[in-house]
Image 1 (cartoon, rainbow, N blue to C red):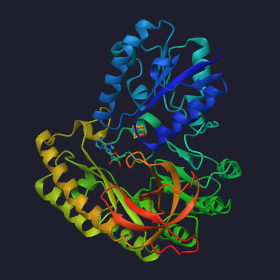
Image 2 (image 1 turned 30 degrees about the vertical axis):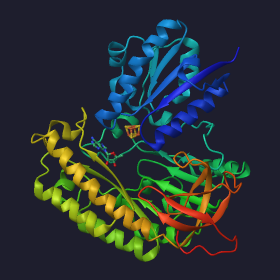
Image 3 (image 1 turned 90 degrees about the vertical axis):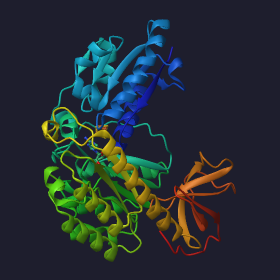
Image 4 (image 1 turned 45 degrees about the vertical axis):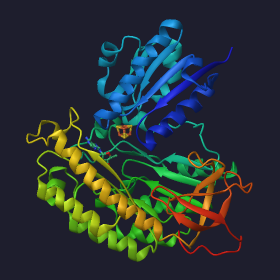
Length: 436
Ligand code: 5AD
Ligand code: SF4
């Protein structure tokens, strides 16, 4: 009888895509996807180690599965992803009901591990990093495509270089072949994935890769994540010149203080970063810019924090992910003294988020009465009876259900801006978009 698998996914897009690769691999090996954990024969936790909170969420969900395992003796439980890589054998000590574990570079061994009943596969090996799998994707319209694996940046707070290993770029020919296949199957948008896509280097560099990808002829191409240090004028020109490249960039600043940026080992100062923002806005009119900020890095003073607030006010991001610094064992910053108390981190985070909310709303209000093109994704989860899609600038838009379906590109007149989405009505097909 066919077996079924349920995957819990935590963390970044890379991890979501890794789960899609696991589903693809397992379906070639006779598994189908289970609707709930209780129905599954195999449960995989694809974990994230970036902050303590993500780890805690995983451990509490793993704990709850214990009762399921007691009821169903042949249920197999696996832990994958960054926590598996970081904790290795310690996962079994903490949770004896786990059957096997494997790291982000060992996805290919999953069928083997299942068959042989082996306990662990967590080798970090560049040869394994570039392995390719046919992913079974959640969407029929938008697809993630890995272009590189691992990370060489060693930001002092970050665990990723230790869990995903050194940077390895995937050859352009295989990236382009995957995207051609996606296009043939009706996909309209791809997002190129890597920890630092700007440092892509294979037979060509990142801007060369963008040109190759653009030649496939999809409607929309995105990429994440960019590192400010490696964002060059040439690359910005490529974004401006290639019509399929969407007007959005995620460019994490992390802090507005040069002292903290140095301690974080980011490789740029605020002035460098600010110049790149100006260059992006000048050469790619209408581009939306989003960012990541960490508050409470060890040694962050009130002055450092205020510099971050001033940076946000000056830059005016379209959206922001902000986090309290979380101490990660094995990273450079782990042993730094002068940790910022939790209460101070919380206060700093809340004030910053409030400031950003005002700016996000202001950015969204500028869309009112403008016409945008959206790629319909399906039913809105929050607005019952409405459809939702995204603008090229990555803003969520809801429209009334006129029978448009997933994958349609439609023109929409924006009637109302909210903090987290825009509300619009479908407009004449011939209308020109006035905003991205
Ligand atoms: N603590 C808090 N935030 C972190 N990030 C990475 N490591 C940590 C950490 N130890 C944030 C960074 C990064 C985003 C993906 O997660 O802002 O850009
Ligand atoms: Fe989490 Fe980073 Fe691993 Fe992604 S790469 S799953 S964000 S720890």
